Amino acid sequence: MVADANLKEIEIDLEALERKYAEERAKRLRTDGVDQFQELKGKLADFDKDPNADPNFARDAIVEDVDAVLIGGGFGGLLGGARLREQGVDSFRIVEKGADFGGTWYWNRYPGAACDVESYIYMPMLEELGYVPTERYAKGSEIFEHCQRLARHYDLYSRALFQTVVNRAAWDEKRNRWVVTTDRGDKLSARFLVSCTGLLSTPKLAKIPGVESFAGHSFHTSRWDYAYSGGDQTGNLTGLQDKRVGIIGTGSTGIQAIPVLGQWCKELYVFQRTPSSIDERGNRPTDYQWIKSLKPGWQLERRNNFASILAGGKEDVDLVQDGWTAIVKDTAGPGVGADEQADPKELKLAEMRKMEETRRRIASIVKDPDTAEALKPYYTYFCKRPCFHDEYLDTFNRPNVHLVDTQGKGIERIVPEGVVVEGKTYELDCLVHSTGFEWLGDYSKEFGVEVIGAGGVSLADAWKDGPRTLYGMHTRGFPNFFLMHLIQAAGSSNYVHTADEQTQHIAFTIGECLRRGVQTVQPTEQAVESWVQEVLTLGSPRRQFLEACTPGYYNFEGNAGRVSALNEFWCGSPLEYNRRLQDWRADGELKDLETS
Ligand code: NDP
Image (spheres, helix red, strand yellow):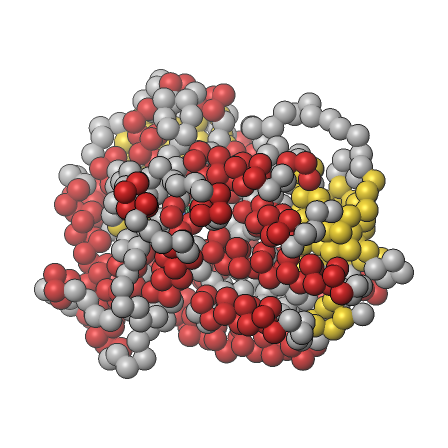
């Protein structure tokens, strides 16, 4: 795949641009890596309070024996529950920290929240539920409602334990049961345990000196306080009309919230460390005639087509034709599976032209030249997650919106009055932390559940040198335990697609075990070893690519260690991953699993 005609006309001074990329990267280098962030605990526990839940909620503790316990009620838990029902397994519980289903879409209700992956491929089970999203890029509230729709359709509310956190899950070898205990005193005993706590679900704050000293109002984007801001996800933030608001972070979340904040705040200060690449999103209402013209099975076909193109596959037609597929088609970039026949220098130039196009777009929209320059990204595509938005850049043309570029250094200090950058204090009434989430870090820490497997060995100990799984879903020593994550599973920009496949696989395995009277199931050591070797081998080009990148969460803030090589995706094509799982199920022999 090569760049299109317009891109080819963009002149690139390769050496000068490489120098510029290196200079920009150097500004961001620091030694503390992922330790520059902190959890919302201890002194920061207030940041983790759920603004959408009833703080006085109470219920009696439950003691119950079920076939399966699923931890997490986002798309993983929802699809898991749905697929279990399809397998005829009705005895299960879904334990969820929030007060409803939805996961990401329950928590992330910040103004402007939406999904920049096309709704027709992102929102699962559209054909099964007969639902058509109202627009190409659905808003967060519509996706959240779809989660609730899924839950109602598969009667999952009756299986849910909301506002409940699992503390511990221990394997009882005598009874072949998981014993799951929660912060509400529940004791659930289950034959199977499924972890569906998802990705990017543990919010984090930057360890900025004085972060807890701010005297104004402050919250993380995933815990948006509408009682303070007024309004809702669509705007109308009347509580901010007389406020000076600061927002830290310009990742995918920040760039969605900033346009709405800019519209409503008296003054908005955007504290930027590294600019995101912002390409056109091209949202539009759904064309229902087009939807009517689609043949059954269209959603899977469209999802597969997107996944294939994103993985560098050759497809006759690009069904989705959005910013994501454009980047890949125009660059065949090393982050996503380069064309092996292509000249590396040509590939490099194609990628640089594409990013130059993005920079030119910024310059054409943002009127103040210094602001436009500060918003330009100088790094390779897929070093950081690409962003797509149609209003973000124009927001900087508003007189009340101020970009504070920290030159890659981040914020110096937070003081009671506001935020300090390069010695200057920006006085604020409200400070929003759009500083992201834990990513492929220490799984046990992120999962937050003490998991004790066979022989009393904890998952944290078993994985102290890195995760060891089969398909990212089974791990040895932890019978009847399934994980849903991207760790050692197929990486995808559309995780719900992967999650959908994983839940079908897990539910099938559980269903088969119950039907066959299998008591315990776990992967063989050989199967795990072979999968781990695949993870390492297939991941090697991605690791090399990320090492040279500007720091960000993708490359563990520029400080990846050995464990992180195992915390990575299985870097083959998601379609190949799905095909292997489908073949395994079709084979029906429970191959590579040890059963008793
Ligand atoms: P990110 O981790 O992408 O962004 C965090 C931001 O905080 C970055 O801009 C980071 O700067 C900045 N930051 C961190 N520390 C400091 C500091 N000390 N001083 C100043 N700035 C700092 O989190 P997001 O919540 O934005 O996004 C996380 C992921 O969630 C996305 O990548 C995406 O996968 C998903 N998402 C998807 C959406 C969708 O539409 N599909 C929408 C929203 C999120 P720097 O870049 O320099 O590290």
